[in-house]
Image (cartoon, helix red, strand yellow):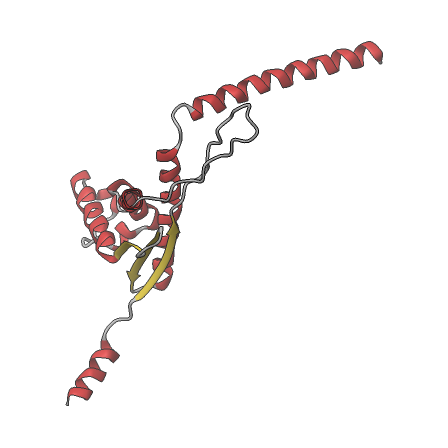
Amino acid sequence: LVVAVTIAYVATRPRLYVAEMKILVKRERIDPIMTSDARVSSTPPSPISETELYSEIQLLKSRDLLERVVLETGLHRSSQESSEPATAMSTAEAARVLDWAVNELRSNLDVEPVRKTTLINVAYSSGDPQLAARVLDRLASLYLEKHLAVQRPAGAHQFFTEQAARLQQELRAAEEKLRGFTEREQ
């Protein structure tokens, strides 16, 4: 009887697919120490601390990141309990559906550090294998975007914008000189 019940349970329960990815946490670059002494070498990077690892995990679990994943993968549409079209839904109803979908994503998402490493294991469970893969793909892309925005040094964007503008002016000046030279020398 126990074997029959077990077989019936296994045969009738819905399939659950789990998509997994691992994220390696490391420092992007090392700023070398610039001196006139040729014998000075740069120090090796310090290892990633547990605090830094858990900061990245919190970044992965952040509400704004999960909301974007829900909206971009359409999880909020599959979770609508009402038959109302999305355009007829009130703002409060849309916020409730989004909140429910984010909580559902959070409950099916498992983000944990791998013991004694600087790896983060991320797994998402779903009844649809394509959906599970799509959710992790979007999560990875959006996480990298957010990670880069958070880790970017202050003033980097302004510096590169100024440099690009300066180089464009130099390019225009060089093109003018070239035109003047071709007209003069025929």
